[in-house]
Amino acid sequence: MKRRSLLSVCLALFAIALIALVYFSWNASVRRDRAELPRYGFAPEFRLRDQDGIPLDKEHLRGKIWIAGFIDLADSDSSALFSSRFAELDQNFRKTERLALVSTVLPAVNQSVSKLADLARHYLASSRWRFVGGTSAETHDLLDRWERIASVQTDGKVVVSRFFLVDSDGVVRGEYDGRSPEAVQRILEDIGTLLRSGAK
Image 1: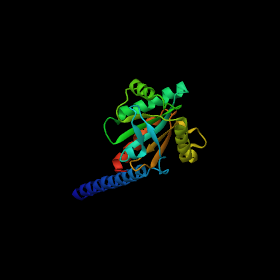
Image 2: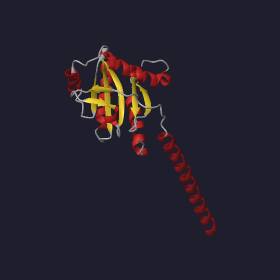
Image 3: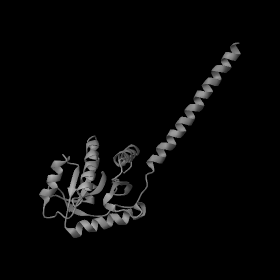
Image 4: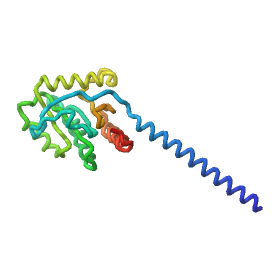
């Protein structure tokens, strides 16, 4: 009787150990897969002015994880949608100073930094959310540069509808359709992956 009880205990302990081993192996695999976000190449160089009239370029963002995207004021529906997506991200970013948002505003607003400031005030933007603009040549050149990076992934879709996740080394690690209701959640999950993995 005692031997039977001892055998039952040993079998139960073995089953628990086996389940724990399977779980931890699965969990490690999931974490490894999440940490291996794709690398699409370096984010394009740019130099534009923000809502405070301060020049911003990629070098200023080194060391930060940032989201890049466009707000096209010529399309009121899309500009409202993408601005609200940026605003939602800004609210979620308040927990860390390692993150930044860069919204390139179209069409060219180089003569109206005040327009950028109006947008920042309207959406209650924090200091980490930069609205940037420039001449028509500058903004369209930047649009073309992002298009070249995104062309493989977007399958011909217009780059102005995309968000891009850039790590602290300036490498693009994710691309998202800003029209999708799941876009913000996907971005936050991938940012969490970079932060947890200590990725640059």
